[in-house]
Length: 307
Length: 292
Image (cartoon, rainbow over all chains, first blue to last red; front, side, top):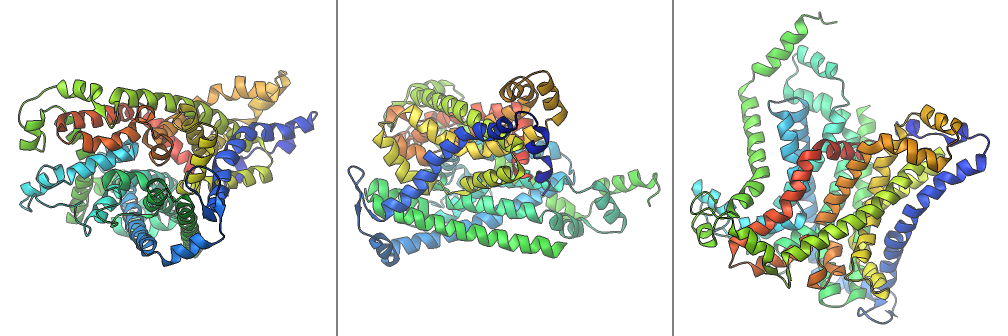
């Protein structure tokens, strides 16, 4: 799109040392591409390789084809984990994108205090996720935690053991994930909203369109592509939210909060079953890829419809 | 079209004549603001009380006020190493990985801005793909790779991994920054006899300082908070970074809540203060990276 325009066309600028001008961009990209090849591409291929055998952390991989994948299909723990991941992912993405949109809209409509809000709402993105997880898990403790103390003040009781119960632990983790990501979604969506000319909003206001009407009929149709981007980013993040879960619950109680990366960690680095862990990691990546493609398809269709 | 004098009137009406729904909405914004700041305020308040007072006043508003928790946390051994060790490790890892990541990433960004459109788009797509890969799929082979070269539990090993994963983001942001450099400037540099590299170092870099501040801070936020690789690649307590080391904090300091919260403050506030100072650069960097 617009990025095409800003890319400098070297063919036009380079005259005499034409060859050097062509090699130069490749030469400066080489270190980064090497880094990506060795520490991103090679490990991804490595996961596929190790997933085809068993490996105990030392020595060579003993290959035995698709055995790990067959075992995976019959493993109730894996299916449970996929279900947990999907719940975690859907709830986190829906809440993060919705809250992010509403907060960004409030700032772009310049509610009183908008400048301060923009900084304050972004703060949770800065805090290390492990510390967010540790703080909130402490805050969710019965009686002594901040959350329960505040609930107690409101007369709602201060003895909820949020993280000790498998029915509420996942909700607590979703809350923390949304807490850490909403500021990021807000900022990116705000960037898109600020490209909408102010006159459009003024004209709509003159025509008697209310705030909600403007949100649905002006703002949202104009930020569909960016909503797609942030939904994809949040999806990848929430499928990968190892830090939050590990800091809060280590995947427990039982396996109730074991999203896929936590399960991979347990299979590999606790049970020392690296081949099996790699197979789960590969499946995780495939699920993320399918979801990413689906999200992009949906939003591309939407942005075509809006035109 | 609208007569010019009616516009301010409309604006004033939009600002001051709100329906009841507006106030409901605004209250919700204030509630979200409270949820956002509670952890920061709460850990700060609680870190200033002796443990016995924390149990009595979980909101941190009553009891004795003390500073001794900070000394306890700083010296206190958490999961096998003192907090001060973790902080030194975090600073070292951040410095090394940022030096590598920002250098490689910005060079790549410059290449993307100067390459032919086809090459630039292809490499950008590779970067976006690398950016969306879930880290977990690289975990086990990276562990194997670093183990093979004796680089587990080393600053160099984990820094290289962090540098690799921050490179795509930095490259894409710096591409936008460099693309904004006027082409006339590069042509003028060429006429003055600068080669490509000299033009980059002496002409382009000085006017792109803001972009460097942005990507450095974004990289720092990533490194300071990363735990998934950290947990796997830094297994010895004395080599752990702050966010990895703190994971064993909870069990350890269960009896000393005061030191626990002081530790959280020590880990959180340096980066929060940096953000508040350079807030504009962080937000502009994120927006630049996304808008394309």
